[in-house]
Figure 1 (cartoon, rainbow, N blue to C red):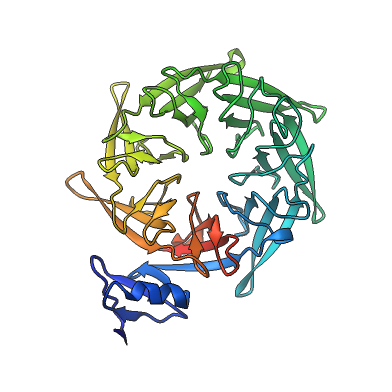
Figure 2: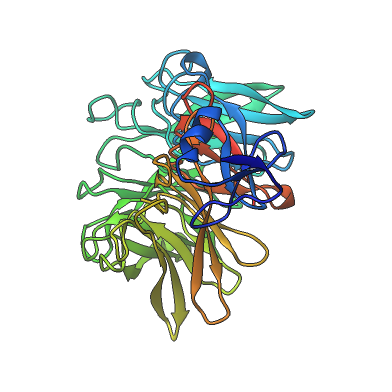
Length: 424
């Protein structure tokens, strides 16, 4: 039964359905299927999830496995892995105009020397240039090319793409993570494969005075205590040091690491934590989040009591980092298999996404700290598939006014991926 009401009821939690600003009352689990058919957005009471743009495929772009970047004017940027004029993927911009959003393809990859299949989005520098990676194309010994790092610069509204490094395999291959940009314009990134041991690399790019770029590998993963396979999450630059995750290696379940700068002498690599596997976390894919106290937060794809992934915290004391699983994802309508970074609000609540679970198409979750040191998880949005989003393979970015933006690989009106706004 569906009746008009200001309150939504659905066991086991209260859920609302946002449709043109109205909430309707739900009773009975079977009504979920009706909601999906109507294209409504299932959200926790008091929160909203709105689709800003649905990708249409082909030249418009498709398969949105991308983080979202935001500039000071509120424009959103990201990539599509496929689509564009040549089918090799795109870099796009979504701009707020009036009461709506305008989507613009800034660049279409050819899949050859300029790169192809750009995963995980782009990073802005202080001058408004965009930097990213593509897992194929370029040159090197890899089938289809070993991938590239590229720059997009804007001059008078015209965007120009330049490949600033083409991987050879020996220095890394298949770069699928965003790059980190420091105040001097240096770039840092990771690859999941290639390098001296074939297990991935951490690299740095520095622009010379003549405009060319100098590349160097600053760490080759060995698969030992340092880990292997640089994760898909962008490394965090904090106090001049780099922090990130290796998806595998360590004890076999991935690691969290620190690279401490020694200036011209290079970098010191240190493993901060090796994941133990269930009931601990396993396979950290997403980027890390630091709070004001210097604690680290993140997610894992596997692990936890049910093996469906975790939200974890690392705290430093007496020079030692101690890990705590804040939440282990569960069966049922809970989410699972998170590849997400985390974002936080002013109250210290954490938000992220799961790539699966919920109604089967992934979720947005919230983890809230309690006074006794425990944390409580809730699921403010269950992605329902077209015309809602489906399968968020990345986390969210914070915008003005306490809202967050993210992307889904599928879903949207055409099923080719969507950009959404989540308001807790």
